[in-house]
Length: 236
Image 1 (cartoon, rainbow, N blue to C red):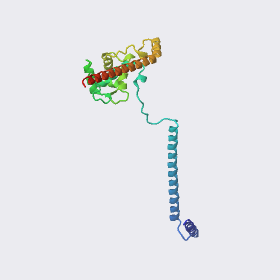
Image 2: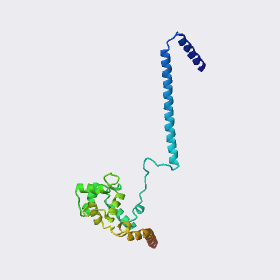
Image 3: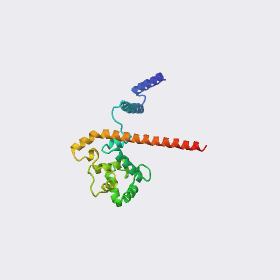
Image 4: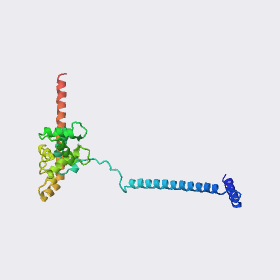
């Protein structure tokens, strides 16, 4: 097939040179064929280049070079991110957050915040509630996550809230004292350094206390079960 096509092309070329055939259509066809081939070759080259770039990018990510375009899902740990607060304080804040998270979706929305402020005895206007959320709403979803709820108390302990602001009132009426705890609330640089040094040991002590409390509860449960079995056997 290739030999016949080549022979046909040579024959036509000779006829053109002898003047027995018009060359326009043939040259245009050849030119169109050449252009089409060039375009196809360019498209293939572009596709190969794009695929090569993607493969190279994938290899870099697999090797830990460069960063993903989309942010990775980071697990929020309040005890490591909010080291200025004790475990007890954070647990108290979590308990309060869950109490007012009526929808149990992990957020406090505008209506739930309205209910919270009313129960605290400091009702706010609709605009006031929106401003309260806006002040700590880092992801701009118009509701408070637990992390953003903790930010309220961080700002309160650092003195970053206006006295007459809704968030300041919330922190003040919450019965969670964060005025002098930890590094952020320390009044002097020296107190801050002392708090930073003792933070880890305090953290470990609180964990041990929680473990001992759980152990005590388990032992009491075991004793109650044994007493119940003895009582059952007495009636047999």
